[in-house]
Amino acid sequence: MLEEQQPASMRNFLIVWLGQLVSTIGSSMTSFAIEIWAWEITGQATTLTLVGFFSLLPSIIITPISGVIVDRFNRKFLMMVGDTVAVFSTIIILLLHLTNNLQIWHFYLTGAIVGTFNQFQSLAFESSISLMIPKQHYTRASSLGFVSSYGSQIIAPALAGYLYTIIGFSGIWLIDISTFVVAISSLLLVSIPQPPTTNNENIVNIWQDLGFGWNYITTNKSLLALLLVNLLFWLPHDIGNSLYTPMIFSRTNNNTVVLGSLAAAAGFGGVTGAIIVSIWGGFKRKIKGVLLGMIGAGISKIVFGLGRTPLIWIPAQFCSSVNFPLNGSSDNAIWLAKVPANVQGRVFAARSLLLQIASAVGYLIAGPLADRVFTPALQSGGILVGIFGGLLGTDTGAGIAFLYVICAVCMLLVGLLGFLIPVLWYQD
Image (cartoon, rainbow, N blue to C red; front, side, top):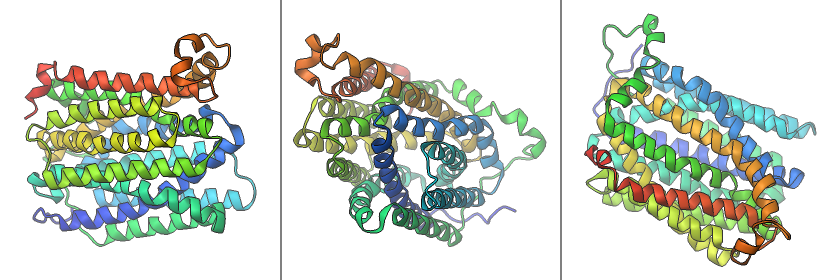
């Protein structure tokens, strides 16, 4: 049964957003603990990157059908199912830890399960924004999403690092479970509108609609160009991002304080950028915000990769994170404005599918490239020591840093080249 359509306002959106913010803080705390635990056991970048890969793989498979389901079924229910599955997966991990049976592959499996249902949850929420708020607030609403994700990075690492010594791994997991309860409760408090349907939208036609999202994008050349530019940007970004923790641990002898400080710097940068965009509203021509965000992020990450101390890493990380709310909120505003509400699930699913494939490829190749190619090449006697050793060093993290810098340069080039592609500027 469809929920009653209500006038667009920010109230219900803010209630759901606050619930998701609390849940994101809990999830970020557990992610921080997982990275430390996994690195201490294996000491390999591949281990950490595979967690990301297995979280993405099932959602890639389910994405084509998820868009059709989101456009046809109750979006509030789908969001609640995503949170519920995440709670039960967290409980399973906690029980395995308490019984001393927890292993790395358990994170691969639960990550795959949660990733699948998170696809439905995130797509349902994203597709509901245009129905929950007035059009003039699209960019601001998108920027609040970045406040949530980056705000959790300010609180979660420091809180997890402090509480880990007091309440341990199990205590962190219990906190995460309680935050999911808050997220589910926030959904129960609000009505989430459903899009209008047409007469021919019924279950029989689901399989015929699987290619609808892709067909819609390919017939809109400006959206297709925007998607391709995003793919070229996010592939190197995700390769570098998956190597972030191994690079810092390698160069600081597993210093969790430095890692937590960098996470906090990223959080402050992201929140700062999101607040600026929320108050300002972004560029009138949204594509300008997309490309300038890419350029700023690329430059900052180049500096970050070349750095070897927190004195360089912290300000570079802050500057990098400032750019992503501008980039992401501008991009989201374009899609929300150009795609009708009743087909956003299918169109956004097609976009999400390709971006997830790029991310999965990035996670899959990042670890082996770092561990087997770049790390040996920049260790003592390696083939790249004579060329780049003076710039990046020859310690265990030098090779990972070199790959990180290469990815950052690619991100910068994509943003610069975007200004030379005329079809991109047909968005507004």
